[in-house]
Image (cartoon, rainbow, N blue to C red; front, side):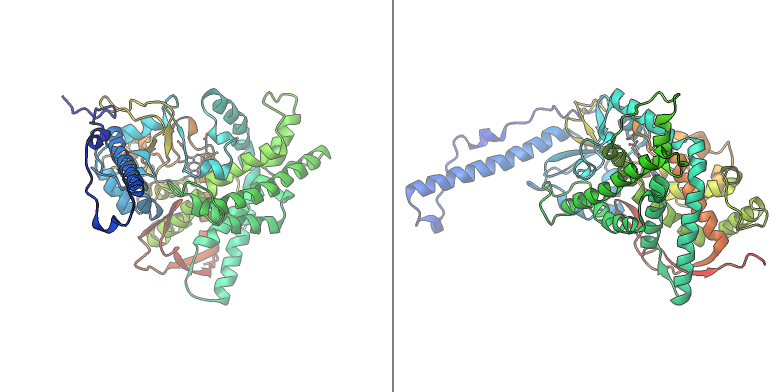
Length: 519
Ligand code: HEM
């Protein structure tokens, strides 16, 4: 029979150890009177008891799950969580399909395989998204993403209208304009200052500009885009698995909360301007306009009484969910293409064919649908370097995750995506970049969609999948037509920096030159 992994296993109480223990008086303390000594002993006994209770609790909750025998008092693995690395995560995943750790006495169960990861994502009765520790402070606890069960399903259904094919078609023009604007600037700057430049921060700005213009169109001024982009870096930096628990002024979470407040003010203003424009009979030009116009349609059955603040909070949830993930997906998209010249050549050949040699022709959804090779590139790039490595959930009641182990209530339980996405049984040569694996309908990759956890799974699965895939494809398609790029490969290019999502440690250093498509 399998060993009992239940967290409810009995362990002796540490308090018993102290009932009749006589402490010797250390020499250095002889200057203290009897009363002071009694206080000293009492305090020492309480502190030591609490520390032992803490260790007892750790072992009690861990049961026989793999994990450290003793936990560092009070802070647990806090130091590791402030310096996350793939190597440290890998060590934890290697411990077993389920393993335990702890930070600031928050008990954490990591799921390393596909079965347990999907089980967590699909068990809303037992676990809800906790995102990261600071998420409720950064997003506000009344943000819709923290809803659960029926309330979540209904709220989300209303938002699906913002991601229909018709809506996506309307966003496409804005996305292409912004991508061209930023890539043109990169080229101009590269000509003024030849040589490699890390594209990571530029990519983040381009992506923020795209998101805000798609969401708010011209209802948000240029200065707001710059302001939100700059301050957003505080939010990204605050997204550690577990932060210092209190958001005191000067802490990362405090800065992130200030950044959110400032962004929400701009987004609320944009919602108000959109209302005014739509009331004046303007044509919908962005997500806000489409949303407000939908309310006024007689056939619209959903909720109509959204306040400006509520709309701003929804848009902010989209920014929160996409800014880091999309920027990461794009940076690795560039890196994978430039490192695989044969694949880059095939992408360019497809661009020439679909665009019929006209590289200035605006893209349409149909044209992107024809770019099947590019879509395989995007899918493979996201598989190989999944922006999101894992998403923490929190148990709302004891969660019988396996026959032998029940995760205690209020624990973090973390499904891992990377292990499913690099499973050699599903993706032969998992570490190699092979878009072709997505072109064969009979491939193990296509036959096992359950392993493709890039966008999560279950009721909280990403709402922006089509939009995200389309945007990455569009930016890469535009870039390969506008420019040639060379990778300045450094020892850090293959090293992974975990900053909310993942980025190459050197920021992906590219030399960019304008491309002559007439050849
Ligand atoms: C490459 C880009 C993206 C990646 C890799 C990504 C990945 C994810 C993942 C892993 C989740 C959690 C799923 C789960 O818990 O099962 C998620 C949730 C979510 N994503 Fe994305 N995402 C991306 C882009 C976007 C975009 C562009 C938007 C919106 C414009 C968006 C909006 C959301 C929202 C609102 C949620 C929470 C959904 C809910 O709780 O019901 N994401 N995403």
